[in-house]
Image (cartoon, rainbow, N blue to C red):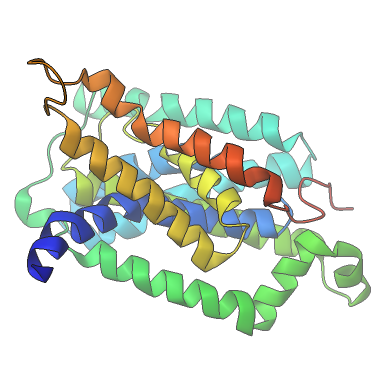
Length: 292
């Protein structure tokens, strides 16, 4: 009974929740530092693409996973320059970053593989089996510890809550926010790597499928706290696992439920949950405010 539950529900839910958890933790760090982060979708796409091609090149999923995170971090440098150095509107910049990231993988894939739809499949022996689950759990635990029990985490949180107090202590607000932005890119890039190396066997165009926005919704639902954010990701993971199981199922009559109706379930749940919870969530006080 327990083994059946683990195999049928727990592991599938954990699998589909893994990219969400990586991206949501990255978004949480960025927003707690005071920078709005709606570019998670772009980081996931870039991470999934470079994770796939790095795994193909090195025939090593761990190197591919690392390069997925690095690719996300490199893209976050661009975002940081625009919003922290040039003080651009963070929502507009994040939207532009998502659009930019949607175009880069097909463009490079056409040059390198003569295909804009997907990269070549990763051999079975070069794919992850279960390692990303353990890496994700370790990062969750490390995030919680650093967030609440280290000077680094305390200062980064103050950058989003009380930047003037942090500045009076001689700590640069812009430096802490840069750290939050870079961490968001790296972690969301790892989330993208799990899509192409772990949940799939190649990069497929627009394979993030809105996961960046669901991860941001999980941050809001989790009230910008690590463990509640992870639990929110698991909630959305349950809805995705359910919609996978419902495909082809006949609920009434003789015809199965249209697959389009089933595929909107995670996004519908996201809107319903946010509509009920967002009024009781309080964002960091200085979120979106430009640092001097």
